[in-house]
Length: 265
Image 1 (spheres, helix red, strand yellow):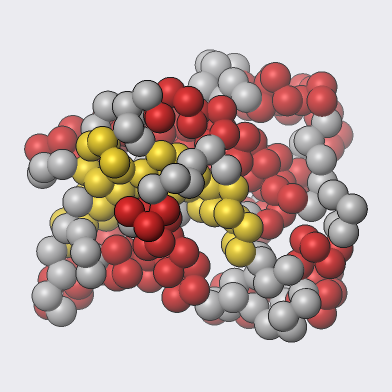
Image 2 (cartoon, rainbow, N blue to C red; image 1 turned 180 degrees about the vertical axis):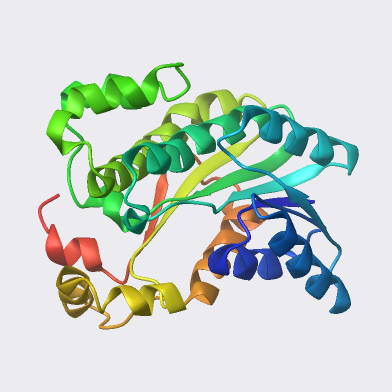
């Protein structure tokens, strides 16, 4: 079985791809939306079950883990949910993108069967800047009760949505590296996957409001956005036995964007 967390555009493309070889348990905070998506999948022959889950709610995460445990062996965890800078809320972005992801990783460590993998969708934004050394110990402890307040205090005036997004994704990548030894002792793998610019309706709309994003597209060596199908294909590969020696690292799928804008990093 695959547990897919997040029923947005990319989450559902990932679910469809994993559903070719897995039974599916799909979680999203929008209970109506995720049930509609699962009903559509079932009408097409997929084995898909929906569950409401807000990753900022510990009881919801516990309920998700319990639901997964009662449905059989969990082979793959695909954590896709995330907030972009468009959310314009430092606290919400950190809570969903980092604290939520860390909470889900912790909850599923005991549920994944040996040989299984956790794949956490990150972003090429994680590679756009180096994480200041002073912030690293704090970002590496996202489950401490006062984590977000402490980070905001440390950042001061820089505690904004753009900074939250970049730091949350960089910390997510660090989390997957940090947890790899503990996961490996249980026969499990954990990786982050950092897409670059993805072609989607929401992404297309954002070009109207961000000259900087258009500049990034123009800088990408392949000269185009990535499709959601391409990202889902990488997720499926990372979940497969073909990737059985890949863990504790980030897979950058960005059309060469970071190589172009940060050639010396």
